Length: 252
Length: 207
Image (cartoon, rainbow over all chains, first blue to last red; front, side):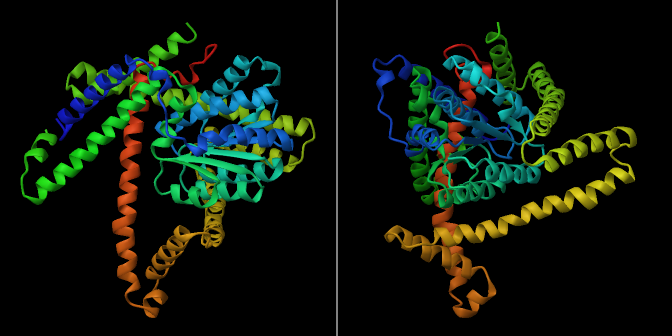
């Protein structure tokens, strides 16, 4: 068994128990959440596109499908609903074909849920080839041609992050970015108006939907973070005193 | 059924891989490997759907006379032509490799090299003094930039150790803090999918 497996299992089990406890707490739906500027600005960005009569652009990046992409789907659902209701031109740029199948379904479903299926155009969800550089070149060309008023650059990014953000900036778009690719976060912070960093991206699901299940998992996640901080602090002090008890327990 | 079946597949797939990590049972390991192997044909079918979408969109551009017709023709011809070349002559053939090595790789390198100019322009816009924090950002950025190159060390030899300290202490601390929070968030996303809470692209009215 790999090092730390038992400790990880106990940690996950404790997290699930905590989530169940929070779920059963009264008033969970009204739990106050810290204001996340990037998520608050989503509606403002779509409204800007509506007023200017210019499209909204959404892209998920050239990185592989991971938790960042899944978290981005929640924001995509919200944006799709808003553009459907406001009848704003909308196009999505994708690097990988497996993203394309999922994203097309998401966007179509949101248009349907909003009751504006007639406004849905399947050709606006565009697969731009499976190669990162080809995808970058295609997005640059698309943004320069379509001149979107708002760009959502949320997902898993590699070296394409800066290229996409700078191109959006040069087109005059308001940009909301979000990724956990630690090497790309500085580029987004430097070039975009709003950046979702770290867990802010994963909190989007609970923040937007205010669903009790997601809120309870978010609360459990917060407490897990406090527990980790305590373990780091205690572990550092014990390691300084050359006491290896905690290290031995966690390594099981 | 339209919602329940994809959700059931996601739950079973995720749970089998997660349980195989914690419990060393042979049948769990086999189930986990089977699920992982399914990724390949699923990705292949998705690629086919994506290629069809690419062709449809570019044909539509040609039909309605939008700008960029030359680009659309290039995409369609190169996509279909290269696919036929690969299928008929094989991906190891000299013709296939010639196109890849002499066309595709150079085009990829060209696009990648744009990053250098974008980084320079981003630095020009980012290193501006608005408030005390931006002063700290400017000083730290310049120290790291100059400390990494020979001319910086020629100007002041202490720039290199300062640059190393900035990268290894405050930068690493900030990165680890972000990674810690995002790791917990990623675990929560995974658990939401395995528990069937994250409905994502399963569709369904009101979701």
